[in-house]
Length: 245
Image 1 (cartoon, rainbow, N blue to C red):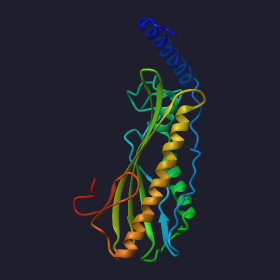
Image 2: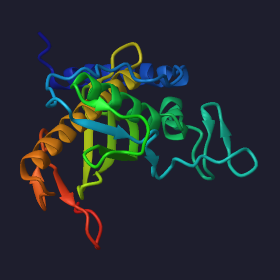
Image 3: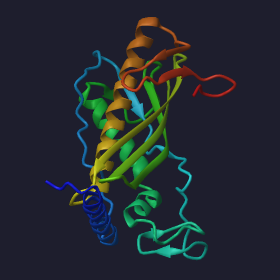
Image 4: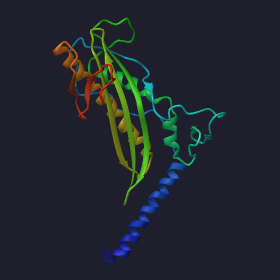
């Protein structure tokens, strides 16, 4: 047993430095960003005859989504970046920030989740009045590494806005914020935590759409405001001042 407080502190500090060093090496050898491997099958089921159309891809309104070309911005080993962006930022994070693929991934995986819930997914219009039309907007897709006292965490954040309408007068909007963390050990922790966040976002959106569809079917009209499942967020009616936050 180590009795000396100073020696215990030195050992803890040495371990943290070694972990950060291995993390730095992992960032230097960061793997290519790949499509998240997620479980899109859900445990809930829609009533027979519920139909939905998902606009693909989602809109992209991330602050750093428009990475510039070589004539306007600085090129790093991880892709095109905006002016003033440091080339020392982890390559995986820059790949995610600059990739145009996440809005498509979200829309396609949401379709799979809705199909697994027994929704009939309608691919093309014109749409009947009862078909839910889902439009999504990706507001944030981030991966960051954070040093703690005795560990290093990889954290991923998604922010998404959904707008759901139909021809019978339903107009609703809801924001989603999903976050996951994982302790950095070996392998590709950034990709692992991204997979978790992406999958949770897809399943949460599918559950919220089902809840909205069920509530609308019972009431026969758009509720002004009501709670959805999971994260305590709410669907809200769109009005002249925009969607409720």
